[in-house]
Length: 618
Ligand SMILES: [Zn+2]
Image (cartoon, rainbow, N blue to C red):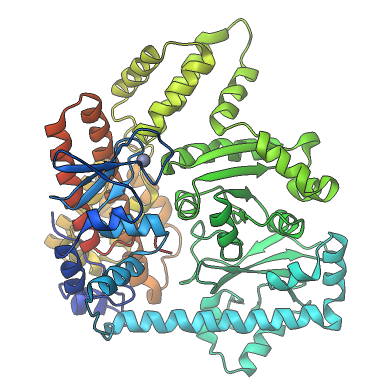
């Protein structure tokens, strides 16, 4: 397979494909590839791990108690030949760089810099490539615009205009220190307050548009997105403001409004409040997840500061992995209504996959976290969290309560099996089976066999896939982009990314698109409609094609981001498959096979790091 290169998108059409393909591209943070190679060649994983784990020699390996999960007998294995570590208990591990990332909750470039510093390896300051530089400049410009806007909102909050907003916040019991810490602001009534303010500061229209703060509907209709709203700045983990949320004050719709996606802000990538609360989360080794801005602020206000919030969407895998950098213990504090329960169930597999132990706090009398903490106070809430059932118990109790007494165990077991099949991580799955068996009074071995039988029947157990029905929308989007912008097809072909698509139907269709393009120099949606595909893929492409295509200026970025997502997913699947085989080999006590698989894992990690996929990178 060809290696996928992350190529910085340029602004000029076409430069993306021709100008930079094949050239070595620097990492984010501009660390040249040879530095990483040098670090890798001088890797000393035994020494590094020893700083965190007491290691004992066991054959040619070393073993110790895993730093990533609680255990009494050592499962954490360090292999000095391959410069890799792996835990047979929880599946964590990696090479030197990834170990340091995990144990210190730091990003890839940070880990590389630390290791370089230890070894006295100098990282030359390299000028980033043109496209990347433009992208950095755009980012910096947008962050600046957001900061200016935040200053404007904050000033309005404190002025006469913000009286109603301040009264509203006071009415909800918010102290001044909350308003200050979270930099709450007020967007005044009117269509062009912010726009005029920023234009007077010479912010170009193009940046205003890209920031999402000002809506450019057409030449005549240009207006502030946020009007008469309380404003919540949304920060990333570096404390940069990447977006805003706004709550209406005058009965307007919708009640909550967020920034649209921008080059800075991708929905589902950020967690509200985390920049302010991460230290508390790390020191308590526990995080409370709430849904809304005010839930978070109310808890903080009451002195519960190890809290974070999703931003009006269901928890995503990226968010789960983000919080996993700070703690492996999460308590979900959702409304007791049906929507809240559904949200809990959706997030359960994500937490299981991340190896996060989650508890579910059920608030009495359908109160929400904000009400509850104001009425009963911090200690009462902490008591509830302390007593909260684990998610697994919550799940099992939930189906038990719904199950008819007479239908009893059979149906329960069937539902449980169906659920377990959807747990992607094999180790988590085994733990879940164990707990369910205990809870339901079933034989563990039998339940496991049943799950595996069901999985085999349904093809690969995770995720459940009928052809086409669960086509990854990101993969589908790549095909859509190819049809919409055929000039990019050679670039896509060169990158080898089509081979990384999970869905065979999409790989086939992608291949056909390339063929048609090579024969005719172009390709149209109409031609694609003639292709035979499984699972209604062409219909879904057609449905996408009826919308307006992305603007020319962001085409390169769309390709770049889409391909990067597919590649990241590809690696995740490879790691997951290896983990599954490692568990199996370990259960069979097949040391030779374990060894081979660890070697494969080391190679995969190296390839991944070479590919500059910054895992867990914000
Ligand atoms: Zn472990």
